[in-house]
Image (tube, rainbow, N blue to C red; front, top):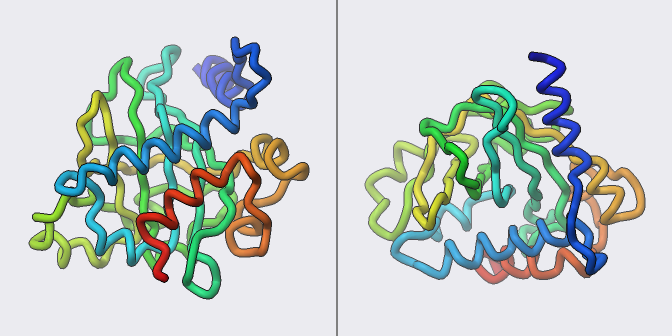
Length: 226
């Protein structure tokens, strides 16, 4: 079983692309991440509540999370994290993350699922461990959806991470626990020319790569705090 898991993780780390255009896999995932946020926020009555997005310190978007075909319960995905700039206005360059395992409170089956996570104030201090486990290293709750979610807000204010999923066009809060988040150093090297740690990217002054401009622009569009 361990051997099979290693095969799956190797496939995640070194995906085989059939594209002939020369477009990098990281560029495709950045574009997909921007699309996920734009599409979710475009439906205002079924989107992430603006109040929560404005309070978030970091946002993680993982497009096309998959269920492993080789072992039961295995889930994996690769996405990006961005955090507020130190002055509170605008968002940082993105760091690449890998999400593995976890219980999502539902069976994703063979369908791909987009995952959105908001990291609130207290959760940011714990986020950049070498291996961060959702629900263990920081408390997590399913995020509310839409404008009519104010009644749920008070109950969620103690959560350090709020999570949502979108599958087959349906966007909803999801009880994500047990998933691990790690730096995707290979993708960071591809984007920045060196293996930056995510902490250094999102808390430093690393310039936003051209291919990440749409992703960062989407975050600034919906919650720049200007």
